Image (cartoon, rainbow, N blue to C red; front, top):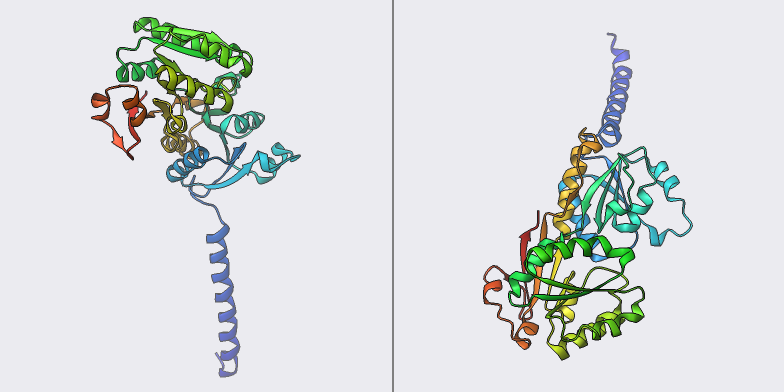
Length: 324
């Protein structure tokens, strides 16, 4: 090659190399990703609350996916289905009842639900939806209660038949098999609660607070706690927050562990498994929390229960148990 062309040749070579490097970097940044590590999942949730955040942490730790959060309470007037269609995700994660209510309108991509108490009541055989239910079978709850309070056999509860009839019917059957007496009273309006609770006086040894929104209002909880203290009737609840307020014990889901269960489902789906081959499941673990101070005031012996517990402070101890 003549000497006069060498500088021009060198400059062209540098330009070509720069462009080649640019295209390689572009392909790495924006090109096809692994089967699920780079796939985007839209997370639909009604509001921002701590349990949802914990569940999402567990989900993300297992799935390893890029997540796009959509909080319905922060999107008034937005056409959610159209918004999701524009994002073109490979999957939707529905967190909570509101999230699932919106996500069930989607038919063309998989939906995994999480933190939903009774999902089957909302679904009608959709083949693109699966997930993890918050439901803890009544027989498991009654077994935990019987272990902690073996001599308290009369269990009272209030329930709205429009919301909790099936659960209470299953609870009646489980209680009968365990030799327990379930004293259940129907409630249609939260304003009925004080009279119904007072009507249980001298009829029950423990009150079972269900996750029924007609029952678990702030006013009813306040009255129920007062009734519990005055009559030394321990309260068995569904959330540790009520244990912190003065209930004796709760059996709650482990949100992070549920998130991990849903994350495993999502990873399998994004790796190629058909969603209709992944069966919905219940939460695998529950957290049982007990208020030590309330137990002492009510003369309840916690020696046996605390042998497997993890005490988190002087007031409450917690233990995790399998509920599968």
